[in-house]
Length: 454
Ligand code: ASP
Image (tube, rainbow, N blue to C red):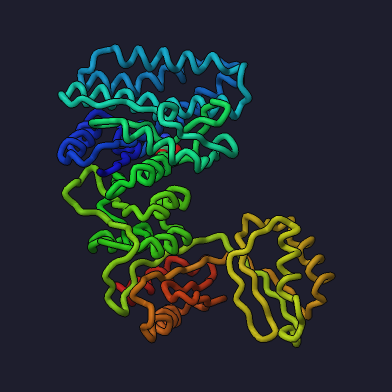
């Protein structure tokens, strides 16, 4: 059995929805279809989820909601019209939205916002089920409520309550035929609608794939495959092949450094259950896409991808004979912990210790206070904080036990006149990372791409 998830761009209009139906009908193993809300039809367009947020905000502010309400309904109505579904589904969607809007004074703002946001996928799943019926394929709209998808944590940023797996797996064992399931939301224990973070339909798909032990989780989007580096930096990458297979480990390393493959929350359920994830293109369904799985055949000396992420800073603490002080590292980290700052990496020298943290957790206003605390706690010789760093990440299982991979990267950067602030290679050898100045990022990615893929 395959669980497939279709993103907003795959469901933005009737033409796209027809492609989705073709894909699903082409393979009877595609039994569970998770849908997003309709997304952008073109670059200047607005996603239905964003239209719903505007609508909800107007209701919260006590403003007139007619226009914003019309904008949402119109998106569904145009799809229903083009597919000749009749106006029944549009009327149902209108009634549903009105009912939700009435909750504005009964719910806290964030609860109301989630109730409204969830309307995007919920109504789309109903519409998609009707569209299948119109194509002569019986399908069943199934909701997170029917299947016990319970969420915990904050509204707008909810997480799965793991007890849900048993309920989901039981519920799905009772369904025959094709199921259409709305992504992005579930219910709290108290029965209130709560949503995952934005883009959360990927998470729903991954959870369902794990719950039913799917053979594969197909995630349909609008690219043929994952590219080995950011095509906005290296345009030529689009002419190449894309990544046919990568391991979960490789994906995790690449998405850590900004690869938009999948967010971590979406990956965890499928990875834990060892379900392969197949990223595919709705607009080019014959392309095999990128398969992400536990292991793959590896050619020694090869790299799978190069990622880069901005927004890092490096706290450098120097103290002569630091290595002889017991507890130095612990005290350093304690200061950060006390300030609620999590650290990313900790490369060290003989008499120096670096702590790389994300700049968002160490804003300039906090810097003085942290330095004061570190001085008091560690009595160092020097403390400096380097800002505006970009982390380059070179990833590939093929690098393990292959000499010279880091040397190749360093040489490429040196030839491009780029100096490195920090180098870090984990013991797994599946990746190494290099910190550089942000202004050198594009040149660095280009140089690395050339040397490893050129
Ligand atoms: N519709 C939601 C969003 O735009 C969730 C999703 O598409 O995955 O964030």
